[in-house]
Length: 339
Image: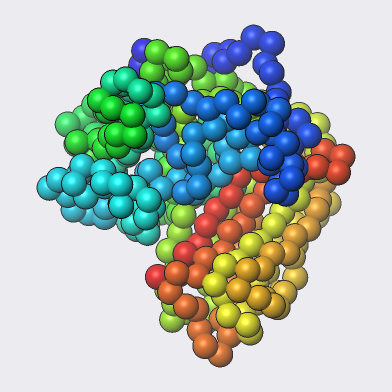
């Protein structure tokens, strides 16, 4: 079944919103997995984050940190399986390349066989303006084709644990003026025929992502020598009602003396975290705000270097979470990596 041109298709009749009440803290993640009976995907699987092990897990479903969408720059690799399909490369994540606007970008996708028998699936690749919340209306019409012009590539793995890599890369030249972009990989197999539900509420979006073989990548490279780094990402309220959201900045590896801040939105729906001192190698700060129904805007994340600058490998994640009572659920994130 082709994915191109799919419109409003109902993914599940009587949608089971198993994500409700799932907190972002470790105890809530455990509860979410327990409620699902620790069930997992079968067949070929794309990871949403490096720690994703294939279980149905709403706390990971919308994260845009997939190591299986691989950017190789403006040169294809001669042996994709040898380069990206070994156990060591799979465990080490993906290269930290960013899309290069106005130039050729070669993109590979890989997946692991979670079944005990040979499996095959088709993978489709899409793009969207870089955003925290990547609902299908933002990317479903932005298909990236392969070098040969196909709208998809087949992936196959003959044994359990086998790593499949697209033998032909996707080929993409982003416009010079497009800014940063997010990438979305979508797998279609007999158990997941590729239906896309649209439009989506926050709950429907989380459920759609959790129950689909889908992976997102919103990752931006930053120079370690810059005194200040500022990156902008779109955000929104997918709901047709006013909803409460938590916005969070999480840093890893930033030295003491660094600062972070966040700002965006508009009067009456402003999102702001003032310039805040980073007090440890693992640090986070957050704010909550109510956004009007259907609200859309942009969010700027600023990172200020201390006296020692930015160390290579440090990262900052900006994330948006929907608030329900005392619990929160991840709607999406974007990562800035220093290298």
